[in-house]
Length: 243
Image (cartoon, rainbow, N blue to C red; front, side, top):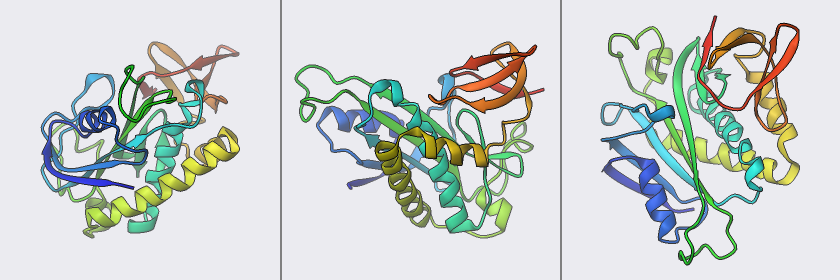
């Protein structure tokens, strides 16, 4: 594993893709003190004061076929939950598709982006593509801006303790490697089962992109299953709100 520490980047995701294009190996990790243009889902920004968060992206050269790549999102969420339990004693819950909650407030976010290799790119012979697994974990924030305070939290706010970024990173990578190995060895079933055990979403009445129903299951490919008017409706990806 190669870990690249940088004081400032536009985005750890962009940096990972740059390194992938240069032939960087599987499990290359980028960690930044600050992101000038951090990305969240749906084009949102991810902004955190320098030194307050674990901001990292992991390069994955997946062994699974593209239709199974959704499993890496579940792996990432489980890894964050395990890391928070390990370094801070926190019991996290998982909100579909990619948020990690403590006490109902967001403590971490995950963004997976994939690209297919360009023809002739170094180190990509026989590769089917790469995934950049972006993870942001709130560690040392003492407060959040207006509008976020009721929806966001940090390890410091939850425990009163400072957790060093490198300790959180080590725990995260160990857990990620473990869950990834299980996914690639045993398939999605054990990963899905553990995700369901930690799910904050299942059983709630939610709205996803205009579809409202009760979240009842996670499908075999990671899609959320809603019960809508007595019928089941699959949601592959979307913006979830509790109603």
